Image 1: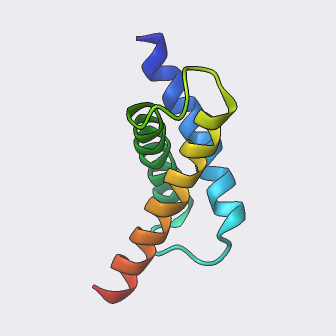
Image 2: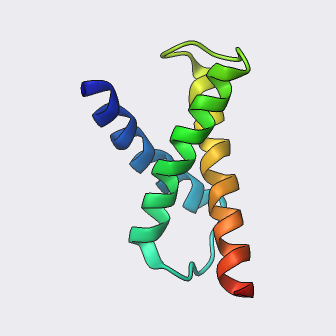
Length: 83
């Protein structure tokens, strides 16, 4: 249970970092951006472990989580502006 709460907290931080890397107006505001950051962190972290790039607590996990959040945020922006 604590692991899930840790990923959610980590996702909030990664979502804020993704927002800093990709400035601009988001169609959903800061709450949606933060939720997308959580999803991106989970997806990126899972992908990094699946590919064998990182273990729990390594810096590669943080990088993959941040990249995942940026990709999810970018995809959301593309979808929301063209829908």
